[in-house]
Length: 115
Image (cartoon, rainbow, N blue to C red; front, side, top):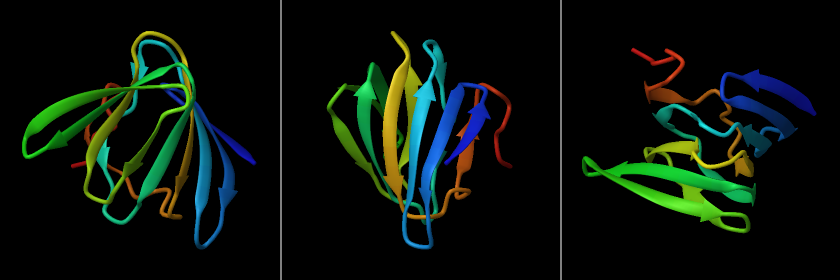
């Protein structure tokens, strides 16, 4: 297992092989991840604790979905998305294909936008 500190909290990588990856994301209240998409990476998330706001953009239309503990969501390559912990800390499990560094940031509160 490997802990990686992030400006929004931290993640624990608990599985990483040539076929799958598994992470636990701990997002602090009032923080959010970058608005992003993945070229190859496909992921499924499961909210363990808190209320996660999932922002998606499809056909230039923004949509917010609130996922409470016990809810899950599938994110496909090319899906523009952002995870937010607006009301409380959020803990979620992410299982994905192994492309951990396949992140194209469109917008980021911590100035990590890709050009």
